[in-house]
Image 1 (spheres, rainbow, N blue to C red):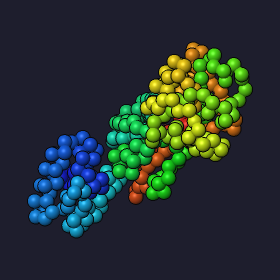
Image 2 (cartoon, rainbow, N blue to C red; image 1 turned 60 degrees about the vertical axis):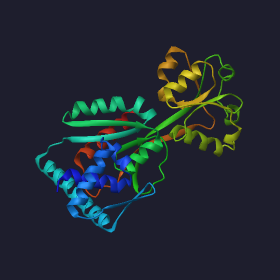
Image 3 (cartoon, rainbow, N blue to C red; image 1 turned 180 degrees about the vertical axis):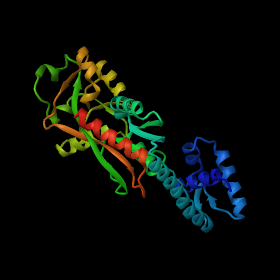
Length: 300
């Protein structure tokens, strides 16, 4: 029995979806189906029930899934034990980050890390916070870095940086001319450009408004966009105001194409590492986490 067939089966069993398994393993769906069928022929029994577009494990499939989990845990433990013994720090890490972090925080951090550990290959996936948490839950990525609170208690969440959000407008905007800090009640008077559903930034802003007794339904949302760069462009074009991480607008502030106004009360959010609870220590992951912790302490 080849490891490849078992890995494909294990991914389908974990996601309960042939389509998602194909995406996770960078395979076509027919190739995934073929590998699973080969394994079913090996065991001479069905491992999945496929009815009404729903995939579920048979009793035999559940048993194979249990053993596959233990086998792959042992493989990884064996590899890391040998690397610990030899002092080798190498391997592949797949990191996922929400858009703001991927664009403004991770490039410098990952560049420094790669210079220090050239034998480690890094892969980066970018999504909104909701998507990154889902990838961690499904073991598609090794480590997520997100910009909103995480509710899944089965994941390890470690705050790494405190981010400050500010009101952003064009320099000749009425709020800028008035000066001073901006009250939450002031925001709803103007067209507001916001992030898309599932964005950590959007979730944090809406929660802040509710805590300040502002009903989100009263907001004048004029445009929803999928990245900080798109939001900045819309605000620069005079389409409305927005709330963005201060770290994302440093260039625009220097060029005087945007102005930043402090909120009263202030709005902050945590940037957090999110990962699965490992049964054993993975040396490559530990090296990255220690490096990232030190980097976050420097940029505070």
